[in-house]
Image (cartoon, rainbow over all chains, first blue to last red; front, side, top):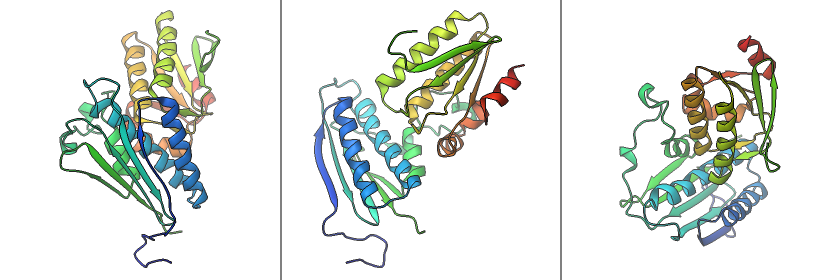
Length: 148
Length: 118
């Protein structure tokens, strides 16, 4: 079954929905499962690079910025769906949220030497869509398979 | 160098060449360890001339870019020079998107970078 809008609602997508602690082994295991699903679905290497990078940035934003000052015990909710034509990743932290439009542009000359602030721009550069909820503690990444 | 070093380091004619062993430079503990190791190299040199080779690296995150910026700042504070080389085209694209190709001196090969130190 497929549709003509490029977002194929595969009836049996590879999915996961987990609550992740700030534990690198658990993060790596989920990332590996996601990347295996993406590879199984036949996404090419540049797509896999993009998805792995955006997944990493979304998770690190959640743990480091979302939970900043709240202790290291809070978990982050992660869901993904890997369809043949689209990959959707949702990451939700338990923090108060933020306004992604208020993050300074890291590509301005005066900000180039700042060591942080590039995660959101990389997600936006590599994903088809990056949407935050109104609170700013949940991000949905959508990657639509590019045409050959 | 510690037994669990994540770097291969050699010094030739005043240039410290550092090759990353990891294919993924993503997570904070890994990045912290790499940053700490390189900081020691910078502190040990009178004038640090540092060449970082990315030949083994397939993925890096914005946190890794941040660590590179911190390394660059430390090298410059001691009047040294930092050059990067052997960057995979996909990773070079990350440098272009973030415009960090303007901040760092990037060469295609380590030989090219070494010549630039001469």
